[in-house]
Image (cartoon, rainbow, N blue to C red; front, top):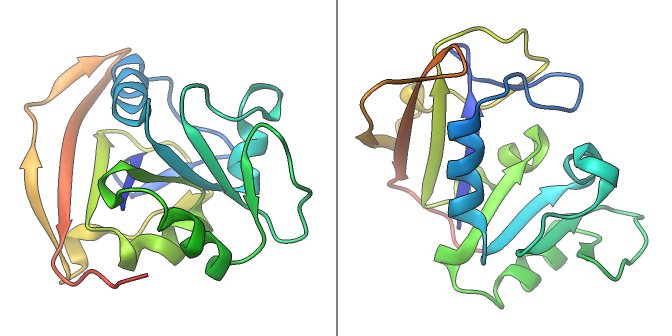
Length: 166
C-alpha cells in the first residue's frame, strides 16, 4: 500500500476539508498514478469531492463507521474491515488518499509515500507527519523543481523501511 498527497513547507495537507493549492501538475500526477487502481479514504475526503461522488475509474474504499452502504463505492465500518477489503487487491495498486486521520492510521502500513512538496505555506488545518524526521522513512526520489501555477514543486518518494503487515 502507498500513500499519495501534496504537502506545503510545514507538511500541511489541507484546509477547510479541501486542498490548499490548485496545482495542475500535481492533479495530473495524482490522476495518472491512481487511475485504474484502488483509492482508500475517510468519509470527509469523499465529501470533499464534487457532489460527494467517488473518483472515476478507480475502486473507491471509504472508511465510514456508521456510514450507509452505497452502490458507487465500498463503505467499510472499521479498520479491521478496511484491511480485509484491501487484502483483495495487490498492495502496489492501493493508494491512501486522505484525510489526515486516514494517513495517520495507515502510514505504518504504507511501503511508500508519494509527496508532492509545495514550496509555500498554505495555512493548513490538517497536517501529515514530517517524514524527514521519521527514522523509518527514507527519501529515495526527488524530482527537479518545476514551477506550476505560480508554485515551485518537487515530486518525492519516501520508502518505509519498517512496514507493518495488515
